[in-house]
Image (cartoon, rainbow, N blue to C red; front, side):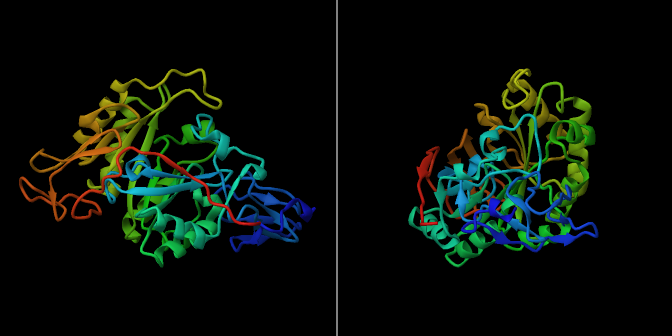
Length: 364
């Protein structure tokens, strides 16, 4: 059965254990897939071969693109800079509303047209003037080994590594992964375990655990995103409970983004999220003490701009992903000198809203 794994892109992994019945259990994420030789896990890119768990798409990507860092979204990490973004295939959750389902739900590794070694990714990021590389489109948890190697190659060139993730990962591999990361955006899909179970085929507590871990045990800069789906996770009661937990457990300075759902994948029967829902969520968050709450996927200059939590002045003005105003001096409000939480350079870079597709290839 091991011939199902391409030897050119398959590498051994360490996050697994043998079982008494001859199967192996993947210990990378809480799903704990138990596999017989030749079987794939739910993520599809990890599977059992010759009595061990292997990763089957090392060095392969669904495509590379230079984006503004604000698109990840990260509003407090090197604003205005370009980031080289890429993903692979597969995912360890099964969200019915997945906005990148053609990548995350892919079961055809051969559709991964772009190929690049970690060193090639880092070199291309440097050539393009990117300050960071982002693992996105699908969850980097499932391409753990490749992401860590790319991050190491980037670090040697002074380029930051950014994880865009759902945070559904076990503690051991989580520690190993975030030792290599400089920033992250974690997708908190809901504050309801029923939502995770019924709509994402997962559970809430491991994600909350990841958020606590990032805040209290790492120096990784992170922000959080919740995509609001009408009638599912957008009630006042849930938003109130979520944002109260957020401030109590993570503090007031972690940025929180509310983004708009559009009908996709297996939830095409729901309407798009109205802008008023995002504005309402932002208001509830700020009333509960979140200092940096944002709206996304809509044109909302106020909801997309960074305000000083002390005096209310606009310290970073944005029009969607474009930085249009800057009133920070050494990370402090120019009006009242209150510190703004984040990782800032002296001035914002001027990448703007451009999206630049990039092709990287190497012989496989």
